[in-house]
Length: 245
Image 1 (cartoon, rainbow, N blue to C red):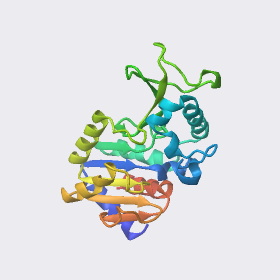
Image 2 (cartoon, helix red, strand yellow):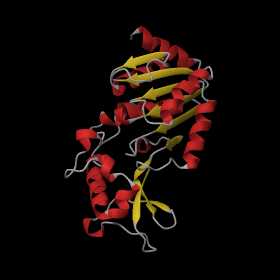
Image 3 (cartoon, helix red, strand yellow):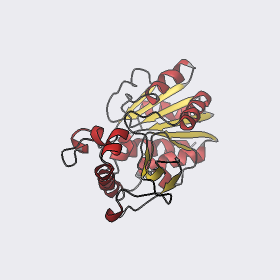
Image 4 (cartoon, rainbow, N blue to C red):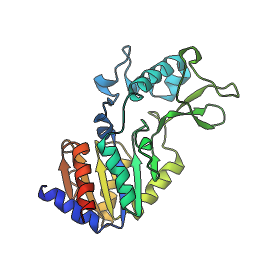
């Protein structure tokens, strides 16, 4: 165990309220691509061209076929040791909250309870008329685009490019950030706002910032400790160290 990991464990032993933020990096270890850049290319479309309210209004069938393709990839994935380690952290800390930027639902499959899916959930849909949400695990091709019982089209309940984060999720996230004394940021690029601003805010409020990533990010200069490597290796080691206390 290196000195930075030991320092992290020592800090966590003194932590009263832990906030964890996760991004695409943790799910990449479960085999889920980022769906941006070349990873997101589908039938000559890029994610940025399809994940918008304007694309859905113009061509909902194509948008839903892309999401059905994404669901097919994500549905084969399983939570990895990093996801399970975060669930263990929830069990260890009385004050715990997870904010995930991922829409794949893998954290939820670990049984974690104190979670904000700030960008939504790919397996949840929303009525285009009244905003009612429901889980929809299977979308038969003959039913694309799926429809609500009221007859209106259903859309994925995710935050698209050009849309704002729902105010309730944003407020819960700000509340969790204001209460934490330690923030752990896992597998995120640190460029998607407003979550990218949280490390700086926590630090300015006197909190401790831990970064877990494969490589340096814009968060690195803010972090008190940066642990570089796979979250599926680093997080279980941290949990094991805490459990040995």
